[in-house]
Structures are given as structure tokens and as C-alpha cells.
Image 1 (cartoon, rainbow, N blue to C red):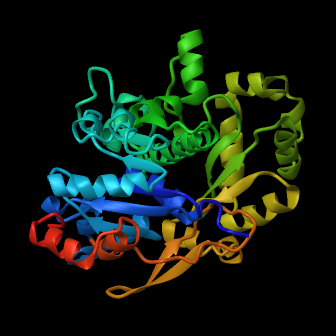
Image 2 (cartoon, rainbow, N blue to C red; image 1 turned 180 degrees about the vertical axis):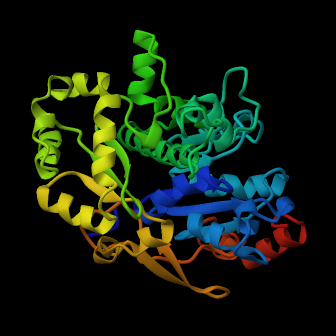
Length: 398
């Protein structure tokens, strides 16, 4: 079986995190992703992110750019534009993660590129989208978590506004843009006409308010921070301190709550009118939770993990990151892969969660800046060696 996207070619005007994360998903599925790196800025800024960084290589860049190709190209120069348009003529999509006003300025929209390739899909991932009063503003994950209300929901009650420990808006924006690009590509192949995809981090973050957003928009709901990272309405569904650490318990169904009570030898908590169903437990959580906290605090984490696993109660340990990577399930599923790198040696990374039947994509390290320039211009664009030398002498590649 061939790789799912082995017949897809994407020209990516991308840098740093959100955009490269989106195209990484496509590259891991076999798409040919060609990064356009601006020589004026020495390429993707992700190459220079510390702490694990030397020269133009960093483990940050490796994380976001495996399985891709790189061409160094000045899109603002006439000859650079000429090269770009030759690439577009042979591509399925142009992907960018710039400010919302930049695709039009750099002529990366469908209207700009349709005369060259009417089937081209032009996907823009920006902070606030390509229209609206904030289109020209820079947008970053931290900003979006604040503006979309996430930071008002996260952390302990009474604490300062708190962001997630991960850049979840950036990562989600990458996933959303990849889905949009594939939707546009499917339609283009069916109907012969490409399109623009206008994806914003802000709308991604708003959309991920999910039921909290629905409750607030319809019922005047006022979200609040919950102690111990508790679910806003399902009880118990949160972290509990043990005698030597923490665990999570998630009773998302009535049967799990009843299983938990029987496991704790507290069947009286099943029949107590205050706790008989979801709604009752939500109203009386401050009467139920102290009892559960006292029970869980009496034994160590490992003992609780064994007890709850044997009972079939949904639960999990709360790991440090290093512990998470050492879980036996991670090893069993092959969730850590190693890629050879000329500077860093063997680079261990997290495997793609996109698992389809067939042979997986043989992983390649992230490209050196401009590593594939000559090969792409020769094989894909039809330039001769003399023409490439002329372009290089003229500063097209920096």
C-alpha cells in the first residue's frame, strides 16, 4: 500500500510552530512538503530556538520539520517569484502561516495563483484570519488563549490567569488547517477548481470552547475555575492526592461512579439521595469530594492504580514528562522514534499518532536550509545548471 498522501505536493511558506505543525501531519502521511525559506531572515526562525540549538539546527526545528524539503527563495524578487510560480504550476496546494494581510500582499491567494494552476488550494493559517479588523495583527498562542477565555478557565480558583502548559492553540490550528487543506484538495480533484482556506488561531481557540461556549452563548453560563482540575459538572472527574502523589479518576458514566463506590467499599454513596445521579453530585460536590479525598489520601499511587485497574474504573497516573515517555504502553506502541542527524546524532521524537494500515512513512530528518534547492529546480521546474547558477549569482536564493 502506498502512503495516503504520496501523490500530494505542498509548497509551504511557513515558519516556527503552528504552520509547520500542520504540514508535518501531511508530510508524515507521505505528502511532499517543500518549505520556502526566506534568505533575508536566514530561514525558518525555528532553526534558532534554544535550548538545544547549534548553528542553523535545533531540536525545536527537528520536531516540526521532519520529512520535508527546503528551498531558499526570495519571494519578493522577480526571479524568486518566477521560481515560485513554476513550483505552483506543479503543486496541489500552497500553505502559509503569516499575518492575515500577508497572503494578499505576497500574492499567495487563489485569485493570484489560479491563472498558473486553477486546481491549486491556497491555505492560510493566521492569527485572526484574512478579513476583519484584526487581520493585520500578529497572533500567537499565548494571546489567543487569553482572548478566547482559556486562561480564565485554567488554574486554581483565585489564582492568576493561567495558560496551558502546551501551545494547544498553535497545535490545534495546525491540525485544523491540515484538515481544511485536505478538504479543499478533495474538492479540487473532484471539480477541477481550487480555493482559498482562511483559518485563524483565534477562531480555532473559540471553537475549542466547545460545550463551554455553547452553555455560555445559550444559557448565560459563567465558567469558573475548578480545584484539582475538576470537570465543571461531572463528579468525580478530577485529580486526587494520594499518600505519595496524584492520580486522576474519571467517572464519566453512572456505572463508573457506582463501580468506584463499590471498589472503595462505600456503597452508601450510591444510594445517598445527594449523590444518586450526575445532577445531584454536581449540586452536592462539596459534600462528596471531602470523603473521596480522604479515602484516596490514605494509600500510595501505585496501590490505587492497581486497585482501580482491577475494578475497571477509568483512571490514570499524573506523570512528569519523562515518566510519560517511559510508560510501557508508549514502548509497546512504538510511540518514540529515532532519526539520524548529522549534528545531533540520533534524535528521538514522538511518532505520529496518525496510524493507517500499510507501511509507515520512513522518517527523514528535517532539511538543512535550502538543501533541496538545486534538485527541485532541476527535476521539478526544469531549470538547467547554468540557469540555476545565474539565479544564485543574482541573489535569488540568498
